Length: 99
Image 1: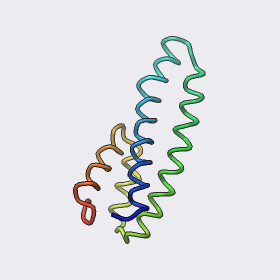
Image 2 (image 1 turned 90 degrees about the vertical axis):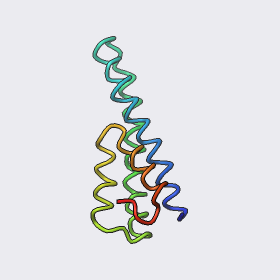
Image 3 (image 1 turned 120 degrees about the vertical axis):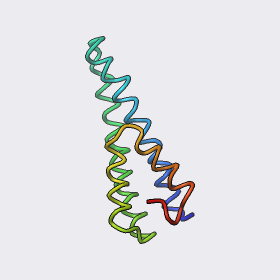
């Protein structure tokens, strides 16, 4: 597997965890416990990881010559909770033909 794809998979998992923490821990703390500072910092980390994710998605798609369907699936996976975990597993099992 290409080095860029490996980096993309690692960032995908980190981005996925940051999204899960933001949605299921930080947001409830903000609205239930009136502790908004958690969202500020978790959101910042998630934003940085999302930008890295999209950048590495573009690099991996160009390097591996992914068709439009693959990179659209990769982009949409970041918007669905647990989507990047599914994508990572899919790429791991079928690196050349995952979509």
